[in-house]
Length: 228
Ligand code: C5P
Image (tube, rainbow, N blue to C red; front, side):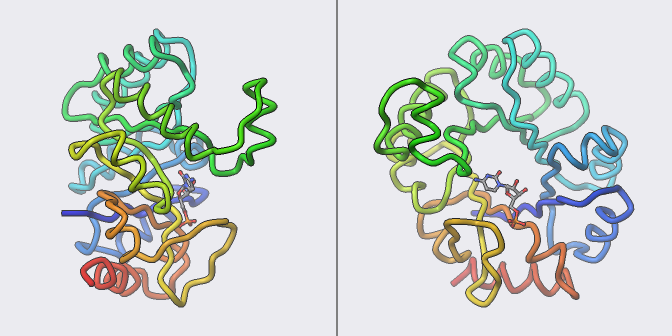
């Protein structure tokens, strides 16, 4: 059954743990990105793991194979449950990352960043690109060949990715907003029900929970919409 990860895009551990305390048993998964991880590091990861939480470490690794494999192994030893790598790191980097998984750590790939438009992406790869969704599927094929566990995708592209990645792949979907939430800085958003229908396995929600006056109630409302 699909689950929900709360993105802790907050500046320090005190604020992050305040959200975790407020949400209580309503959520198990928490996503840590580079801002909070650089500020608070493994101590916060250990604290969350000790509280029985699952940590999704979203550092989107992209480096030489040996370095990424080392980061994956270190994350596994720390008790991280899910981490991200860039699919554009190349087949050897992805295989090294997949080969370094230990202790229940799963790895999902990030393809074309949603902040990129077709023209900017074409400039990076040095050839004309008209269809970013097709690029995303092409990169996902590389990730599957390397043995990754799943992919990060917008809800709109999840059905196409599922066809490429197969039924066992873990599809992680950010950009989730309830019908009456503000879209903030997302170009494309989906409601919890839309994401579930698109085949999401793990929904990622940040500010609608971390900025809510009642974080637990916000999670409860999202779960309710997931079940619709
Ligand atoms: O606050 P909000 O719900 O917009 O947070 C979404 C989270 O998902 C952020 O941590 C953001 O970095 C992440 N994200 C992502 N890939 C995207 C869009 C958002 O990893 N394409």
